[in-house]
Length: 285
Image 1: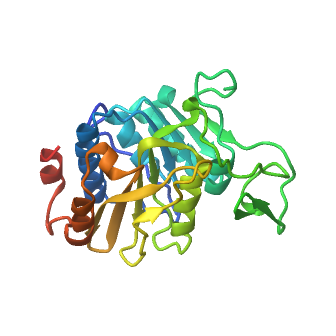
Image 2: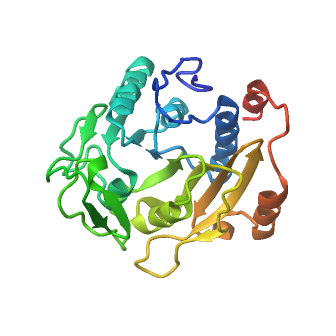
């Protein structure tokens, strides 16, 4: 794995040894970021604040930092893998613009830490941050918002606050949220619904998820009702071999200059060209 473009281009990244993580291939990662660059240019937006869920080695979030993201929160449940992310951040010299959260994804979505620089932020950037408080229980499952969280997997408080149904303060909005969950996780649609309801993605923000081509995602996720978070609308879908990724927009595509019929056609018919290499992908940026 390596950083494909930007400030840290060419830096090799460590991968967790002996783990079952399935990092996004450089070819697919290049396609994702090429498309994101095009979309951000169309919307006249920058990379802004980024959330990298199921972060693994941190390759996706570090690529965003290399291309100009102001801040990245990495969320990864495995403490050993979190240490690899921290080492990769040190290697690429992005420690001061990132935070590694040793948290379960649903727990983070329910109760995110304060934004860097905010009045309530108490944690330094770049370090490894675990959720403190409460006892670690081996078998008991507690309810966190709309999801069950295994207490054995992560240290959490005895009672998690429910999912916020009102928009988070501006300081807690993310411009881009990446998800690279287990390849064919049947809970992927539920997790996207959770993201939509969390209030963490700002209106006009982008949500990108990598998944198996056999995982079918709805074109619209979430609700437009006030207090129900945001509605995610499918903007782009691409498949290459046994990998696929889908990009959602937080809001109505037509409000941001995208035609609905164009969105539907591209989602159904376009894909990465077989045999396209990373140099071709980068040349498109």
